[in-house]
Length: 462
Ligand code: NAI
Image 1 (tube, helix red, strand yellow):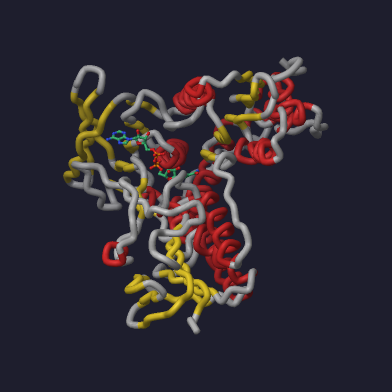
Image 2 (cartoon, rainbow, N blue to C red):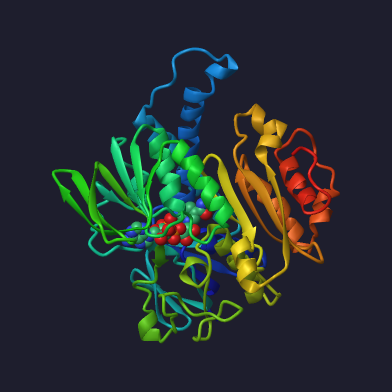
């Protein structure tokens, strides 16, 4: 008999959540993790620490710009960077210890070390080989490199280095106007750095609804971020602790350079599958380096599965979590399922940006007949009371059936508000279903209802 029913390699959101569900469903479960702490990139050097720094820098911004307006007088706080980093590390610690507790509670074995798969049914960790009926690869992703750019995590950093800079840089260049670039660029801009974002495309946040892209960029510019759009970074040179970024404009080939104390490379991530032994096993891969899986997360090798950033789909912690839970159910003989049409995406800047489902551009490309209901936060009393009247809620609904096809929000608590739409979409809701639901006053959520009303007879407050 195998030692374990399931061995999961990787304790990020996909792996640890999947492990907990496996254990809850009665499967004898182990997780291989080589980091000192559980939680993967997300908890240790990603989602959670960046949210701590976003929160701290937002508080500073609020104190500098809004406190006096509310009659809160006195000196603005100054930044004690080591303490701020300590607060961030404390938040990480609380969360990683929380997972350790959950592992103990659910009797999940933590196999400490880096795992490989010498043959189907076996996982090697250090010198030990463990047997399992099922092996799940949940090894996540790593920053993808850019030709001509050498990351040293001191002057030229990825998101990992950006979360632990020795001091706040005076000047920072961010390569890539995606989620990481804008979240971390916002943090350092609010903490006093002069931040310039260099982006290859003509719009920020690729794949987002164009309305949101434009509005978001306008807001970020007003907040002090500089943008050089349509520019391909050619290389970064570091001399005596300072960087020079060279780029070429796509429209006319003009070449130019930018000097900076720090360069953040945020040009995407790639699956992390090194050292697992997948080549030798003959595991089929996709062209872009992801592990190929069927609709049930199975690879072409019997008993080996993969989830999260290591397979196709959006590289999002919650997508990995859902896949982990669904696979656990499948392995326990139930029917696990992930609805890829309803996976929200959130950017945790201030204001937040959130979206789910189709963008207007996608609907146009598909030739779908749709209607747009839009409501600006300027018409929302609660938003104005907290200096967050920027942005809007935009709901896209089918022209004839009124079924919600997508929603895009930029504004206060957008990352929370989007879930009302997600639940609605899971239930096949129409915009009218949201519009007819009583929403408490005064809440930001009323803006969602108003956008839903805008899909029908019209909003009240605009
Ligand atoms: P991204 O794919 O979101 O954005 C990368 C950007 O870099 C693109 O706009 C691209 O056009 C640009 N770019 C690429 N090469 C370039 C070049 N040579 N010169 C200039 N610009 C160039 O990637 P990002 O921000 O690194 O994030 C990686 C992954 O992590 C994403 O899949 C993201 O969804 C995920 N993530 C999600 C978060 C969230 O949900 N809040 C937070 C952080 C990361």
